[in-house]
Length: 365
Image (tube, rainbow, N blue to C red; front, top):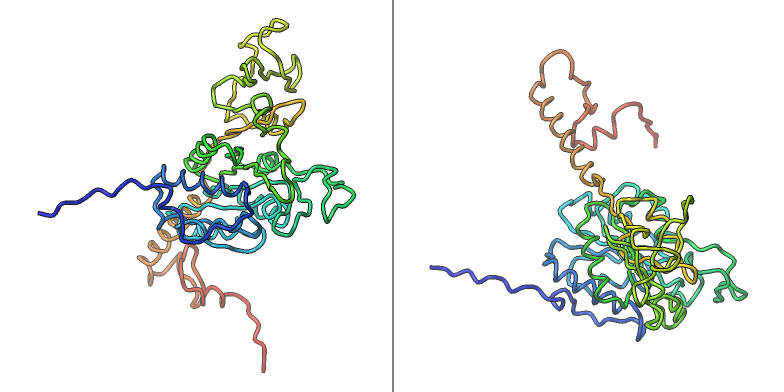
């Protein structure tokens, strides 16, 4: 009698490739890689059904370091290539790894369409507010005044908010975390993977060489409790080292304000309760920044809708059913017959006939 030995539970090491990891010492990408490998292990993800797609930049080296399938593609086009992969094989678990420059500058248009179409992808956007690979030019998320080789007197551009961009594009899942939050980040990645549709996770990541400490105003250990609010669905928006601070709407205005419990008659019932299905609230949270407000981390929005790849698969199935129905009545007179060389509605296949139907030009020698 054969005895089947259960497969041992996967560990993060099972998702590490044989490639030497090469980022600058101290780069936040190491921490993100560790969090992703831990998440994949917790999910028992099948490496043979998992694909990581990246564009260009420091973050784009990610696929080399994972024992899954991967594509190191071209600048800004990772969402488009990942969309093609998901449509060709909807059973695959497809992740996109991009940076603030790759994803929001040259790739902004591709990112927009992946989000609005709601393609079932997990999009991890590493935001370090700088172009690291090409030696420190300012990026779309850099703040005004950023001095760099491409802005020696300080950037004049208004920055892009990745979360606000995703919400404006119609994204259905928008979340944030920090590279060093090794308990929080895997939890957010779990939620992104559970969501069926486009999931954008903005990860604040430190570039130790070209933009070191750019997020210290809310990530440094000594200020984190006062400068971060970790949002959880159905729970009051509280923060602070003693958990006595909170967020509420200003009376009579659609505007947030920070209040302190016990002061001016403020009680817990006055605080906003996070509703991750509320897009307007997500937009308000995405717009907060120090020093006036804490930075909102966690799932800002989770409002599921049918994914694009699922809708495409259903449309293809409908077309195939129509083609099968027509094939069953082929040769009979009446409705449904088409001229030779033409393609009937719903017909799948015969690309040559499709290209040659209708008026064509013949180019003589």
